[in-house]
Image 1 (cartoon, rainbow, N blue to C red):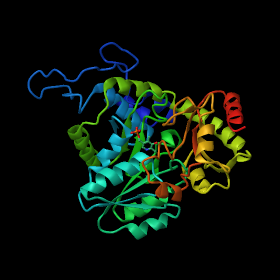
Image 2 (cartoon, helix red, strand yellow):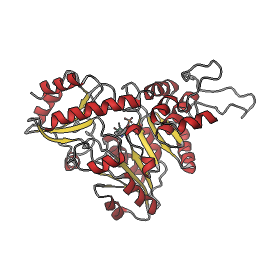
Image 3 (cartoon, rainbow, N blue to C red):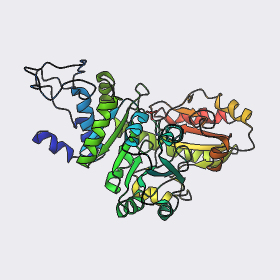
Image 4 (tube, rainbow, N blue to C red):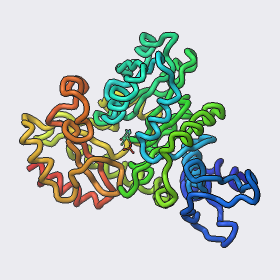
Length: 389
Ligand SMILES: *Cc1c(COP(=O)(O)O)cnc(C)c1O
C-alpha cells in the first residue's frame, strides 16, 4: 500500500468505489487493473518472487478487488471467495467440535443449509433465535459460544437486527460477531463501524450488481483473525479467478449510483404495493410502522430495493400464476442486479428449509420477494399493475 492508496481509503464512498485498491498499471499505465490470467509466477530463485506464488492464494487482479472491498466496509482486510457460501464456509472452519453459534431464525436458505446439514455434522451446535430484542442473545451465550451470525435486513422478511446492540453484548462476552451484509450492501450499511468483527457478503448480489458473477467476500480489521481466515482460504481453495475479480471491480464502480436508484425505485414500488387490494402483508423497512424501522433508520443510509409481499387469499397455485405473469420482472433466484427479479422463497431460495420452520418466520406459500432493479419506474409499476390485476 502506498501513500496515495491510504489517502483514497479516507475518502468518501463513491471515490473509494471507483479507486480503492487500483492504481495505474506500473508497466503500461493502464487505468483498469489488468486481468492477470495466470496460475503461477516466475521466481528468480526459490522464494525470490514479487509477493505472488500461486493464484489459489494470491493474484494481482483479485488483490486489487480485495483492497477495494475492504475499503468499502471501512476495513483493513478483504478476502474474496468463489461464492458467498464459500465465504461462510471459511468462517465456520474457524470453529472446533463442541463450539456453539447463535444465529437468526430467518436466515438465507443456503446459510441455514450449510449450518444444519454440514457443520452440525462436525459437532458444532447452532441456536436459531429471534434478534427482535437484542438482549435475547444473552440467554443462549455460554462458555462454548464462539460466534454470533446475523443477517440484517433478513432474507426474505426484512427483519432488522440492531448491530450496535448485539455487537456490544458480543464484545462483553468475548464472542465474535459476523454480519451477512448482502441485503444492505456496503453503500447502505457498514457493520464493522457498528461493532461487528467480520462482514460477509454474497458479492453475487448488489456488489457485483450485474447478475454475471457468483462471488463472496469477508471484510475485517483484526490481523490475527485475518491470518487465520487467509490460511483457510488458501488451504481450502474456494478463491475466485482473475476474470471474475475484474468483472466485480468493474461492477463496483457504479455501486453508489445503482444503490441510489434501487432505493428510489424500491420506495415507489413499496408505496404502490402497500395499499394494493391483492396484497395482504408487505415487508419493507422504510415504512414508519415496519418492525425495526427506527433501528434501520439509525444504522442504514436508506432502505434498499428488496421488498416482500404476501398475497391475499392466494393458494400456492394462485401465487405461482402471479409469479409467472410478469413481463419486466424476471422470475429467478438471486437479487441485487440492475434488472428486476421476482422470487418465490418457499419453493426457490428457501426451499431447503422445512415447511413448518419457514412458516413460523413468515415464509408462507403466498410470499413473493421482489428485487427492484433500476429500470424506468413507470415500466416497473405498469408490470406490477398488470401482474396483480
Ligand atoms: C445469496 C446469498 C448468500 C449466498 O451467496 P452465494 O453467492 O449465492 O453463494 C448468502 N447470504 C445472503 C443473504 C444471500 O442473499
